[in-house]
Length: 459
Ligand SMILES: Cc1cc2nc3c(=O)[nH]c(=O)nc-3n(C[C@H](O)[C@H](O)[C@H](O)COP(=O)(O)OP(=O)(O)OC[C@H]3O[C@@H](n4cnc5c(N)ncnc54)[C@H](O)[C@@H]3O)c2cc1C
Image (cartoon, rainbow, N blue to C red; front, side, top):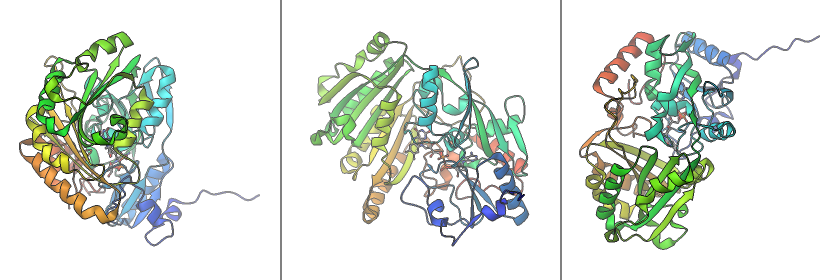
């Protein structure tokens, strides 16, 4: 009888120069793939693999980076040298407990797969706005997903995690045990110093009616539209997500009308208990003021999760080249957005700005104690989106000008989509000073030999 032995982790390493190396190195969302080359890649399938990979890295003195689903816009999982642990095959929904309203998931499960599996149980989670976003790095960043204003950033719903530490130990982190790790994993982003191999997440009742009203306006009316949108937000409950998109607008919002392809779009999605309630909540979008020059309205459209993810797919299409940056501002939409009139008119190909006004926090509810600590009244993200490498120069030039416009008066950034590559200091500015200090202290305490690469741009 022949005995079948598992191949060692060492024998499964994909080395620079191996035939399959480039396929896995470049396996990230952005087609503008960074020119950075890890020495080895290990495609892990289990917690055991992660432990073995980390032990090997320790023996050999390699730095380690982790990839969940490769959706970080700048490929932070790609660094020169060392070992890349690719968790892409760890994407199972391990269990759902409907009584406790919680699920255990492997890291690379996508938002779409989670939402689809929760729906038959009448449950939901604030998954990312694009269906393909994996929970892995999204939850570490904080996670601004659907209905996050009411449900909170997704990391607030992480109840515990299983983590492999730099020493190769497997620990569970929760408010009761290993609470430093629990704190750091909820918002620490790519500065986290362990490998999350499982998340236990709290779930929410699936709203009975998810409906969206959308109004499209000419870019020339940006000032009037911004003032109206800012006032609208003030009158809406938190379970309505109001977004303003400007620049090149996808056909799903314009009904394919080419005359509206460069526009300002106000879209409000209500996560309500029934259609009547949804209709009442979105009533304020029925008649935009005359001076906004509204050109198209779609009111109270039924938008279950699959429809919402269709919008995400059009905003961030697959196989495109991207740059993304974002800014928190203390000023209101009405002050920030008019500055973008010029850049929005010149936005190349599919590029656009996405703005989210955030209602003030309830002073009676203390914010959870998490590394996630940067938030403000107005969030503005800039996405340069183009297809052809020959357009790199023009797209990046537009992007540099646009993001420069948004720098003025910005109070910080969201670590999950900030341009950490051009501006490594965005890492520090993505946290409150106290959270940044604590994160730094914890990294020094729990990863003293810097096994993990840490924030992009750090030595
Ligand atoms: C099309 C698109 C839409 C997006 N929409 C949203 C959105 O709606 N809301 C939002 O908040 N963000 C959004 N994002 C940003 C998203 O949150 C981040 O890109 C996030 O990093 C994606 O997770 P990932 O596992 O693919 O990250 P990866 O690119 O795989 O990894 C990024 C970094 O995270 C760390 N990391 C990832 N997984 C682990 C792990 N298991 N253990 C330890 N470290 C890990 C590593 O340090 C790594 O360098 C979007 C991105 C894209 C491309």
